[in-house]
Image 1 (spheres, rainbow, N blue to C red):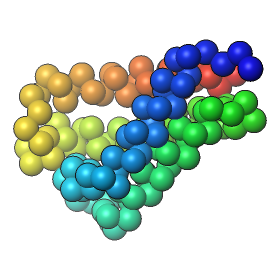
Image 2 (cartoon, rainbow, N blue to C red):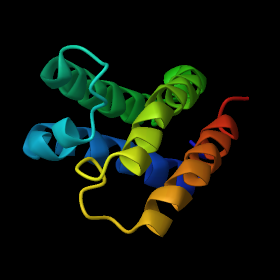
Image 3 (cartoon, helix red, strand yellow):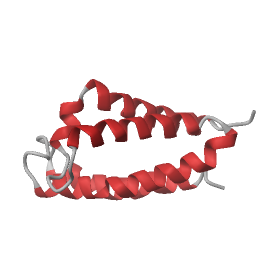
Length: 118
């Protein structure tokens, strides 16, 4: 098995982020756009998705599918980042420059996942 260490870093990052949806759900509930229904369900669902996709990166049989799943998930999460920019409560006290940098960071994370999709 010749899997690069940075793939495991990515997997660990998503697994940890997913676990945090269950450990600190209020943090994620605060950033949910008001126009989305069933906030609590969506927070838990996104946590499960991050955990499953992170684990999927660790296995050759599911690595490509998980990488594409992460790209799709990050695209779906983009409106949350714009919502945080436009809503002071959702910004959770983060400086505006941090919130602005998170948008291109999403695209960098998508590219990182894309690099494991072929």
